[in-house]
Image (cartoon, rainbow, N blue to C red; front, side, top):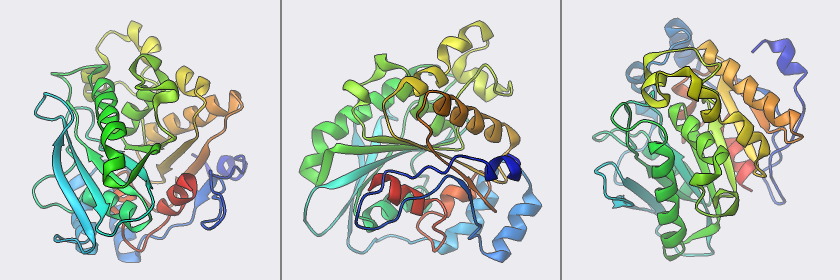
Length: 316
């Protein structure tokens, strides 16, 4: 998105309440990317590049065992082998915490909550625990074997599990926030938009955080991964668009994308903002300067707080 457009964006705060953090205004967020990493991201260009980007950020991340954090791996929320989630909680007990559920990306056809001993996406759940939440990472079924709406059905099943089990693990089932990245953001948006998947009125969640997502298959660039999930028949795309249902939802939303995202993520994020604003429900809307499609989430739980400051504000 052009800087002039962003400068004119509506200045809307997140859902922060006293005490800190302060509300986050919509618009561009100044880069906090370390200079040596920034140069390499620019050299990569506007691409989706998980392995080389992970190599840049992995040295900055924690490794197991994680101090003061309890991790329950591969809790089963359904019958499929990919119906698994990890729960991160503090070892200390206390008042019930908000819950941050993260839905990974992978172009609809790949991805996992964690691969081997990678620090991703443990980094997101660890950040959540450090910031007063319970962190949950989920895995779901993939296309082409499991096309639309398999991931929404899986997200509903995972949220049912969370609502039923999280109080016993220190989480507040009335304060569940769902965050998706890339295809994960598309899946979260689809869940929010299509009420037939909701596990409770309003979706059973307190808010949605959508990072570099694709929200409207009608206007998205045609490509094999998109078609693998939404189908090859464009005549069904309008009914599967998330935009109308997002605009009708009575749910707080945060929409963000990266300056170095491929251009379709810019356009799709702008479309989501426009649809929500037209409905009188403008989201907190951010462009993360200096970041790429992968660095924006690989940077979570490092000194770079460009995105996480907004998430903290939104959850509070």
